[in-house]
Length: 343
Ligand SMILES: Cc1cc2nc3c(=O)[nH]c(=O)nc-3n(C[C@H](O)[C@H](O)[C@H](O)COP(=O)(O)O)c2cc1C
Image (cartoon, rainbow, N blue to C red; front, side):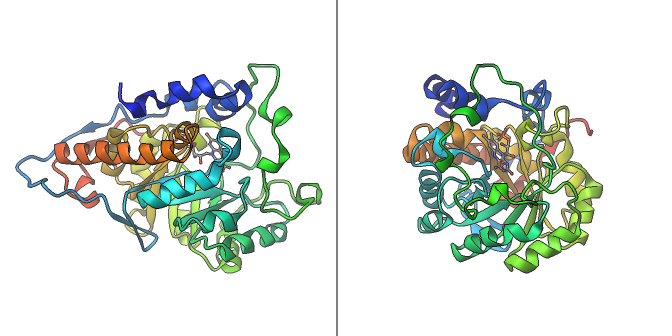
């Protein structure tokens, strides 16, 4: 087993039961959470190509990234490790990887920005959109370079508790949502919007002045609506199987979205990415970048050094996979995969 492959098992041994359950569990029966993965994608590698020098660098939203993967937003990083988002940010900055910060973060945006990491804000919009504005302004002031609007969560899906306590019974409120105004959650209109529409993308771009990425898209037709409404990127995701259970796995949805909008906007993907081969599979199916949800959380159990090692080991694995696939660049990787079945 590689260090990366053993990460989850090691993290499971040291996290408390409610935190472990929070990170690991999928919605309802956990079908989508279990099915996530890339092992059914097959490669058609090139040969007789010079792969002496491999470059993993890429362009995301017009900016340079050293690697074609980033860290997906996740709530409660400070419950996984006391240094939470700051440890994650430092390790991402050192690796040249983009960090997407949850609007539920337990660390002030200014502290995350001060690490020098290239970071994007993930936002959910409330029923009264204007309530989100102060939080958006704080993110912009702290250097967020994009807003990622999560659109697969009109309501938080039901997760079945295995133990007596769930995370929300035991979590220190100071580890959560520190970038909102005090008393935010009690205000009328602070509940999640159930009426999101394409017009919200324009509103978000206007109030933030930032490019908007739409996270949680699985269908080509929805991706087209996002692009038409001004999105700079769409992010293929089923929220790690934490929202609509039995939603298709992202490896099956990706190609349809790329086919529909890939020529016009960036396409990102997440879900079950755990290894260099998984990264190559996603790039080969046309993703411009891949985002990692649980993997960096398992690594974060070991603090900043854990996340730094995750990036380093992934870099080594992806480099090897590129060489074996006959790819020198991210652009070369495109198209060397054979599709799994379509949804
Ligand atoms: C513990 C945890 C918390 C998450 N919190 C958020 C969040 O606050 N906002 C969001 O858009 N997605 C959130 N996600 C979803 C991730 O951004 C991502 O879509 C998903 O984890 C990818 O699947 P993977 O865990 O298999 O890599 C969370 C995921 C996990 C595991």
